[in-house]
Length: 76
Image (tube, rainbow, N blue to C red; front, side):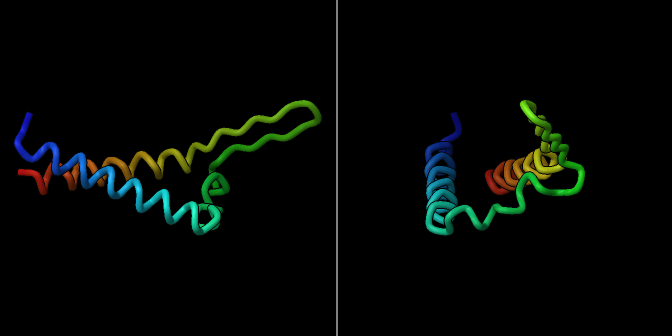
């Protein structure tokens, strides 16, 4: 394990706590757009619901990839 692994875990946990506090205090209004982007599939019929957030998950994947790339880049 790299010697700075504990520091990275601490910063990641701190970041998650800040994000959770923002979502909790904001009442979720910060992410009200999530799942309603063009390209997210939503089909609602009587007795049936289908919800596939393609574009929202693509955005989350890109954001997480960027964050992990930055962590690796700064850790070198």
